[in-house]
Image (cartoon, rainbow, N blue to C red):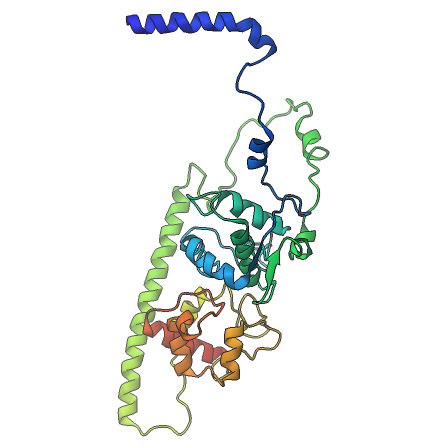
Length: 366
């Protein structure tokens, strides 16, 4: 042992011995916090509004702040980027295998949406949002979850008047009366099983040590999906060639040509990107987005019972009709075709995907 370590150890031991009597009664660490220091950390906000500071913010202001400080992770409309949390939508998904939890679908109180961002966001710049900015961001989040109109202003006075859809979906924690008695009783140590065997595996969560079978199944599913996509693309190309040849050999039909089944099949596959917000077919209902059954040829913003953005309503009033040309442009980049639309989808880059999805939408509208 070096001389330095010997000296340090001796000094530390002596200090502990001398401090032992005092530490038995008091730690002698730090000092009592002064009121100003307590106030600096006492920033939590309760559901009843206790702790809310003065401030205000509108949907329009929140949209600009959100785009600058939040959209890089959460998407411009709260749709989420990569694996960052989704902040909008999810209505009706709580019984799904993987529910989408937002203030529009799950959280019971708006105070959570105020308290957490104000103390912890933006990522890497915690405590940088002013009270007005937080009010504005919350107003925008309420808007993209279809809970307020686009001219809404959130402030301290009207904050507690906002009731989220799932406010009554929670109940008091009763684990001290149910789980605790059950799991703290004397364990049974008689008539135990002679052997233990695995009867199920958490393959979906991928946490079971013996997951070889699950991994092989996943790889096989991916390979099958890739083969299916390749077949669809080959079929689409072949179908297109046959169609051109048929059109050259025969006169143009008087009625609209029948839909290419391969193109419809490809479109159905592409439509999986839209299913989170839109539904089609018999019995379809509005979700985050309107039903798309019969959308081809339909006037814009005309689905009864759906709450469209002001921007899309204006397009409808101008006479926009969702013909093929309009859908092609809209699906390419929704926010460029209809600025300030609430459509969170970035768009379909491939022209063949846009054509395929229109063919599919035609098929479900017939």
